[in-house]
Image (cartoon, rainbow, N blue to C red; front, side, top):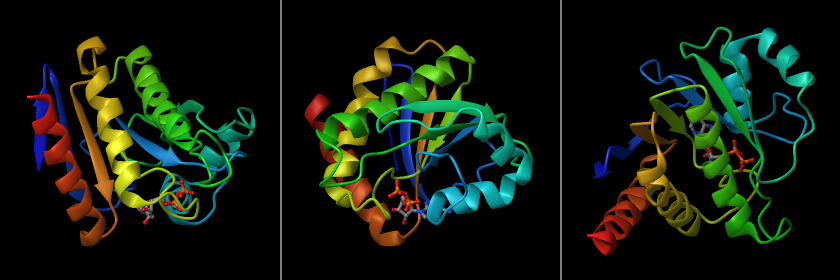
Length: 180
Ligand code: ADP
C-alpha cells in the first residue's frame, strides 16, 4: 500500500532490500563499523561485493542516528546509504535516534539528487526495536519531511515478512488518516 503527502509517496512492500532495482538508493541497517554482518547488512554486502566493504572502511565508525553514503558497487542501485539505528533499551532516546536515521538518510539522498529510496525497518532485527513503534516513528518522520524534499519523490519501506508488512500497513494507514 502507499500514501502520498505533497510530492512524496510513501509505500510499504514485502521483499528483500538487496533486490530493489528500481530504486536510486537502498538503505543499509548498518553496524557502527559498517561491516558485513547478519540481516540487512549481510544481504547488502553479499550482493554488493567486497568493494563496498572497502569503501566503507574509510567512513567508519559512525554513531547511532548517523548516516553515510557510498556507491552501490554490484547492487543494481546508484548508492547505498548506511544508517546506524539505536540498540533498543541501550541507545537513548531511541525514538529520536531512529527518527534521525530516516532524516539523515533523506538529507544525503537530497544532496545526491536521488528521487527514490528504499529503507528496511531499521533497528527492528538484532537491535530489538519493537516493530510497531519503530514503524510509527519511521512514517511520522518521513511524512514530516515531505514538504521540504526537492528531489526525493518515493520512499519504499521493504519488510522481510508478511507479518511485519501487515503491521506497517496498519500504522501507515493510521498515520495517514491522522494527517488528513
Ligand atoms: P538492526 O541491526 O538495525 O536491527 P537487522 O538487519 O538485524 O538490523 O534487521 C532490521 C530489519 O530488517 C528486521 O526487521 C529484519 O527482519 C529485516 N531484514 C533482514 N534481512 C532483510 C533483507 N534482506 N531485506 C529486508 N529486510 C530484512
